[in-house]
Image 1 (cartoon, one colour):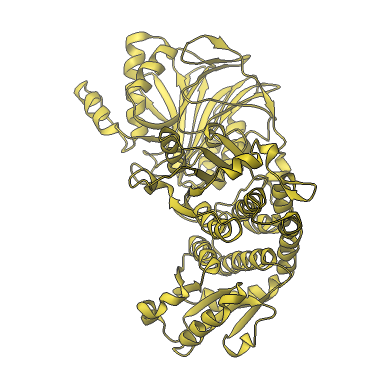
Image 2: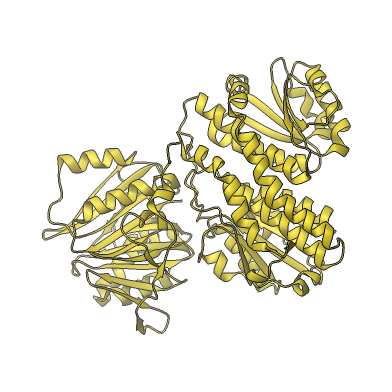
Length: 609
C-alpha cells in the first residue's frame, strides 16, 4: 500500500531516497515526503501529490551534506491526502515513517493528549510517533523505547525511525507489514519493496515478524525477542533494475500482459516431471494430495477471482469439493471444516493483510495450509505450511495481469496433480493435461496478443459508455468477475459481472440502447444457454461482444462483435479469453487517457485490513 525507503552511509542520501520513492510509485500513493539528517538536525520536506512536487520543493530548498534519510509514499487511510498528513511525522525527538494501521490509535491518542501532546495531523502514524517519543523520553535508549512503544500498539506496522540524539542511524521494526534491509557498497538501506532497492544493490534481508534492525553507515544489526544482536544473513535477488522498467511499452500493464506467456511457462514447468504434474519440488507429494478431501481457497481481489476459476477446475478435474472465500470475511463467518480440508491462500505480494490474517486463523484452527505467492520470502510464503511460488516476476502495474494468470495456471496444474494422484486420470490423460497447460495456454495468449488492434477497435464503444456488463456461465462466470474488475478499476467505468442465467431475475432491466454486454462462452456444453441470453440482451438494445470458441455455431448472428477463441484445449480457450478481457480493459483505459498503471485510490500491495 504505502512505500518506505531509507538509507545511511557515505553517499548523498537525498537522491537515493527520491530515486527509491520514484520506483515505489507503482504501489499507489497520494502524498510523499522525506526526512533528511544533516549537521543541523533532521529536516522534513513533504507534500500532497506526486514525487515531482517533492522534487520541486527540494530544488527550491536543497538539503546539503546529508548521508542519512528516510522517505515515504502515503496512501490515505487516516485523514485525507494533505501536506500535514503526509509522512514522515515528528513527535518530540523522534521522526518516523510507517506502513500499516495502528488499530488502537484512538486510545493511544487520548493517553498522549492527557500528557499535553498536541497533534497536527489526523493520522495514526503521528500517534505512533508520539507514543515512541514518550517512551524514548523516559529511557533515552532507542531499542528499549521501540520495544515499549510497539508493545502498546495493536495492528500492523513497518517503521523507519530517526532519533535526534543518534545521527547517521536508522532504526526499523515490523509486525504485519513487510520491510526489507539491503547492503550496498556505500551503506545500508531499508525499503518496503525489493524494487526500490534494485537501483543500489542486490543483497537483501527480509525482516522477520517483530524483528528490530539498527542501521549505521558501516553496519546492520538485528535484534529478536531475546535482544541478542546478530548480523543479517544476506541473500542475492535475481531481480534486475531492467525487469522493473517498461521495456519500450507504453505502460507497465501492457508490458506485463505481453510477459504472460513466459510467466505461465515459468510457473508450470517446474511442476512437470517426466511429463506428469508433480509438486515434489514444493515439498508436496502425491500422498499429500491423496489426503485432500475438501479445499477452501482464501484470497482478495483478483487473487480471489483466480481462486474462483481454480475452484471450478479443481472440482471438474480432480473431483474435490472446493469453496472460495473472501479473506476479509473468512475469520468472521468461518466455513465448516471436515477431515481432509486443505486451506489454500493466494496472494501476489505475499503480504496481503486480510489474507495473512485468514492464514493465521486457519493455522490456529489446526488446518493444513498451502500458499500460492509470487514474492519470494514474504510473510505468507513463510508462514504457510507449504508454499507454491508463481514465477510471474516483478509486477509493477497496480492492476494485476500476469500475477492473476500465473495463479490460475498453478491452480490448474494443482487440479491435474490431485486428479493423477488419486487415480481420477491416468498417466496419458495427466500428460495431455500438463502439456496443454504448459504449451497450449502460452501459445493462446501469444495468438490473442497478435490481435491487439482488433481489440483496440472494440474498446471505442466501451470507452463511450457509463455502464458495462459481463456475463457467463460456469467457468466463464468466474472469469467474467475478473474481467469486470479489471475494466472498472483502471477505466473507472461501472462494470459488473453476472451469471448469464440470472439476467431474467432483475439485471436485464438495466439493459438499454447501446449498453455494452461482454459474453464469455469458452465452455462448449454451455454455449447454447449463454447464446440465448445474448439474444435476450441484444433484442433490448445491448451492444454485444462475444468471446466464443472457433467451432461455435454462427455466433455472428447473435453478437455485434465476435472474438474467436482456440479450440485446441480447454486451457487454450481459457487463457485466450483471459488475455482478451485484459486487453479490452487496457485499451479502454488507454483510450480515455487515464493513468493505467496507477489507478486512483488503489494500491499494489494492500497491507492493511
